[in-house]
Length: 372
Image 1 (spheres, rainbow, N blue to C red):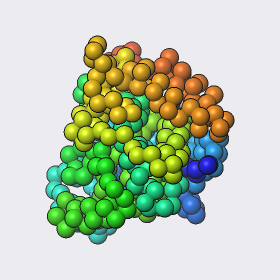
Image 2 (cartoon, rainbow, N blue to C red):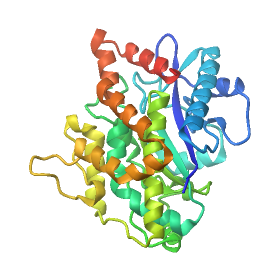
Image 3 (cartoon, rainbow, N blue to C red):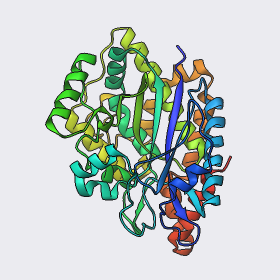
Image 4 (cartoon, rainbow, N blue to C red):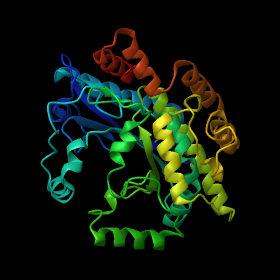
């Protein structure tokens, strides 16, 4: 079965001189042309914009789409005196808490959640795969749960925040995790239980609506898709395509297992949340990440469970699907490049290490955002 794929990427806008975040999303959006099925849209904070791809049938189509959107957004940003930056967090900070867009729903969020909104300016990447049946979508989510720490470890790109090195691989994950319903999802029996849980959460006041269900993977609230939202926004377009390829491979494999009547591996909520924290803290294996891939809840005797073992387990799991789609070569090449060049957080730290200037980090991120 060939699943369609689409990607949403959130970007920061930074001043060309200070490299600090600036509230110019309205200027950037005025310089872009709305289109049907995707485009460049506003985010909650005025220091951000989001690109939304069309529904794509394969990776080359997706790559072309994402690169085109990034370049249009970057040109519009330059016309507005700023640059488009792909980082999960604000490297050098902003003059103050970024104002939110003047929309009734956003004002309700500010009223309900208060200071949580002050540090709302974080950027993630959401990958959608087309699964229309809601019951199947919930079951696919169950199968994807154990792989969330691996995807987070691969995609971390936010070590700096407000002018300091946090020591984390993905500090965005920690900032975002303060929202009531952010984190790995629970294992649910099907669509009926999903609707019951959402209704209870809305009734409790923990969320305004199902759009605020900030689980790392969920049935989309507005598309007939499963949406994986665990990743930081990638620096370069090929990093985003790699993430999409892995997610599509996992979802395709999961859907086949669901239709064959095979249940998802059991990983306790607490263990999965802890594994995601470690992936956020340490990143890829060379940084000592431990986790619970494919249901392996306990670390190995030497303290490692993610490492090459976790990535290899993921590739073994989705290998037949990648082969069938002709995507194995791209995925292996992209992972090899990532291993040689370093993860997103590693590249940010390398850029800083050369001269000790965080401005160099922002410049590197802006350059990589539009590199082909």
